[in-house]
Amino acid sequence: MDIHTVSVIGAVIAVCFGAIGPAFSEGRAIAAAMEAIARQPESAGTISRTLFVGLAMIETMAIYCLVVALLLLYANPFAG
Amino acid sequence: MHANPLQTEILFYLGPVPISEAVATTWVIMALLVGVSWIGLRKATANAGPLQTALEVLIETLTTQVGEIMGRNSAQFVPLIGTLFLFLVCANLSAVFPGAQAPTAHIETPAALATIVFLSVHYYGVRSRGWREYVRRYTRPTPLLLPLNILSEITRTFSLMIRLFGNMMSHQFVLAIVAFLAGLIVPIPFLALGILIGLIQAYIFTVLAAVYIGAAVGNTALE
Image (tube, rainbow over all chains, first blue to last red; front, top):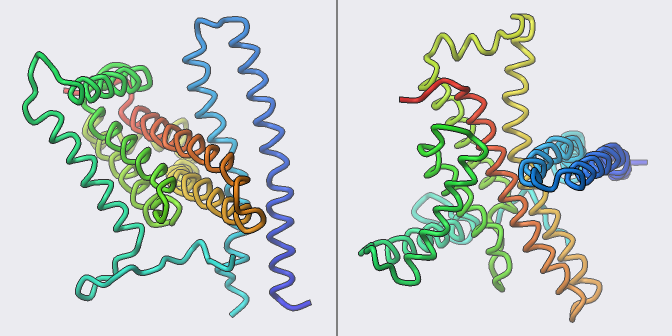
């Protein structure tokens, strides 16, 4: 296997496993926010704003994996 | 399908300075925003016309939203945060026009915007708390956490940049793949999804910028 094949496989693995954790945690966060809004509809504005900020924070982990994948595919330091 | 998302295509040269497509689109958006606000508020009267009313409603909404996020003394941040939001909405939605590309789908525009947010966080933080108090904030709760605090300062700016870039760029790629596979009607729902993604990303970027600046300013009253 040459370095390009290994890089593609590495990028695929990074995105695959990097998406699992954030997907689960975003699902839990949204479920909790839905429950809170269902109980207290009057505080929906605050909850959804906090939810958006929290989702952005969780999403950061997935985005780091995307960065690693992009670097491997397009700016690979080992491919010469 | 072999386009490199980290590379930019040069549109033309202005003397020795290369002008990329993203920069040209940014200029068009800036001219549009300035022009519309100038025409709408050039002769502002109490008996407002339709354009002036629309702009006033927009500014009212932005002021209320920024106030809800940043608490009191938020009025001075409305120009920065509001302009950021309006620019991002225009920039993210500029991809719906045929032939135009969203400047935020290239890495330079998000990087510049994140740098603006990074610098204004420290500017407003120092201005509201003073040098000593602001620097001391990084040694809390213990001085042992100083490297971690500095690291988090850098990584959150970096993630602000990459979040906007990654979302806009990946959507562009998905669209290109769908148009490549089935070109006629199938991409239309994806285009509609792109409008939603653009608006949400503009909102998230603006809210995060407001939260960061608000956290740096703290509860100290700004004079």
